[in-house]
Image (cartoon, rainbow, N blue to C red):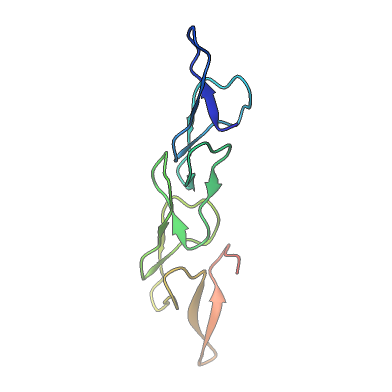
Length: 117
């Protein structure tokens, strides 16, 4: 697993690079790029992992996810972009899935729509 058969007269298996995977098991002949919103940090991977909330990856074949910048957020798993915070709302920290809003004259932390905390 995580390797491909290169065929030819000498049968050997080559490891898939980080950012790619081979999940077919025996007989895989090509490595597959991790899709946007996913990553594979190590070579010889059998699967790609989704980016965590607060992180994103817009490219294919990535080895890591990028953290959303201040003033933006990514509320779910496997996000390909970060979303700008609404006017009058801010994030407590770079990787947050919550925002601070005014409720009845008091500031309160509430999850972004679709966020898991």
